[in-house]
Image 1 (cartoon, rainbow, N blue to C red):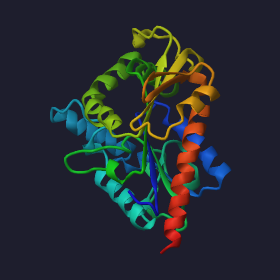
Image 2 (cartoon, one colour):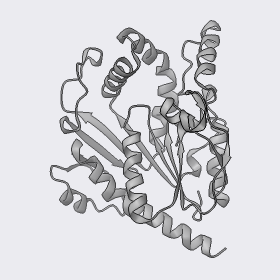
Image 3 (cartoon, rainbow, N blue to C red):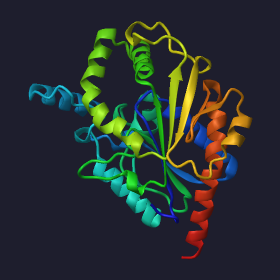
Length: 294
C-alpha cells in the first residue's frame, strides 16, 4: 500500500454487481474532482476469447474439467500484482482493455474478444481503481491484496448469483439451461478457492440477499429485484464508522452484528455514496499531500 498513490479494488464474480459499484464510484470521482485510472479485471485474463476456448479444450482433453477464468492458469496474477505495486510506488504501470463486443472493439479496429495493446498509465492520476475478479486474491505465488488500500467485496448469495448467470447467459448469449449449469459446475472448485477466499481479505463486503424464494435457482423465472432484496454490509474494522448516521440516513436499515448493517436493496447506491465518499476523499487528500512533499 502507498499513501502517495492509493489503490482501490472492487472484487466479485461476474454478475455480482461490481459494474454497478463502479458506476457509483465514477459518480463520486466526477463530483469530487478525483482523477482516477480505471482498470478492468478482464484485461488481466491470460487468453483472448478464441485462445480461451482452445485452452479449455486442451485442459479437458488432459482430464482437467475445472479450468475457468476464476483460477490462476487463466489469468495474469503476477502482472496484476506488479501493476498494483508499481502504481503504489510511483503512480505508473501498464494496462490494457479487453474488448467484449463490436461496440467496444470498433474504435480500436480490432475484433471483439481480443485485447488492446499494453500502454503506460498517464501521469498525474490521483488513484487506481480496479474492478474485476481478483482484486484481493492471494495464492502461494502472489499476494495482490497487500498492495490495495481499500478492498471491497461485492457478492450475492450463491443462489442469486446462479439465477443472474442463468438469465444472462440464456437471454443474452443464447445458451441452454443445461449448458449454463455445466459451466457453473465446471467453475465451482476455482470459485471456492480463488473467489470466495478473497472476501476474508476485504475491508468492506456487500452481499445481496433476496427476500423471495430462490430455493431452486435453475427454475427461477425472474431475477429478484433490489426492492425484493436486502444488502448485508460487513466492515472488517468498524472503528470510525458512524453506524447511527447510516441508520438515520437509510430507512429500514438495522444492525445485525457489531460490525454489520443490513439495508433495503434499493438503498445500496445511497449506502455506497455515504460510506465511500469520505474514504475516497481521505485517500486522495493524503496522496496529494504525500506527493507534494516529494
